[in-house]
Image (cartoon, rainbow, N blue to C red):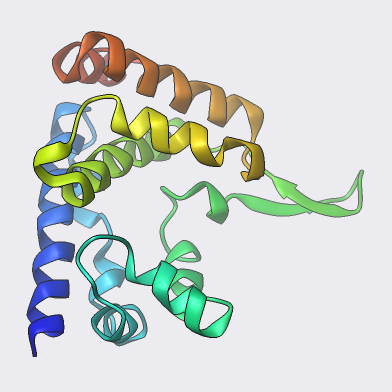
Length: 173
């Protein structure tokens, strides 16, 4: 029962932070729609089973089974994840990254900052989202332009803080 309420609280706190961030970024509807699939049984039940409170339950599910059914469901329904944006390229005859529409890059930024705040707790700094992004950069399959925009905003957050970064993102076209 502790896992149930712990996971529910974590998901809901994260979602609430994303909503606040999306309003600041000028995309309120994306905030209100953010991560609703996490409340579906396909995502919620594995989240409860693998809940620890210090990292994503998807990582623990992946360690147990070699994949995360919750993540596969989630990334296929939520366009703020760069993993959603892959498609078959008729020229190369391979699956590769597609440039993300800007509104979803904005939501992805909001999501990453909120996740860092939730998982880092009182240890959160405005450098954490950038550090996390850079740690996985070598293994990430993301369109170069999408990656460049996201990283530039994470650098701005690290150097200039939330207020200036959200102001910039809100006006970014």
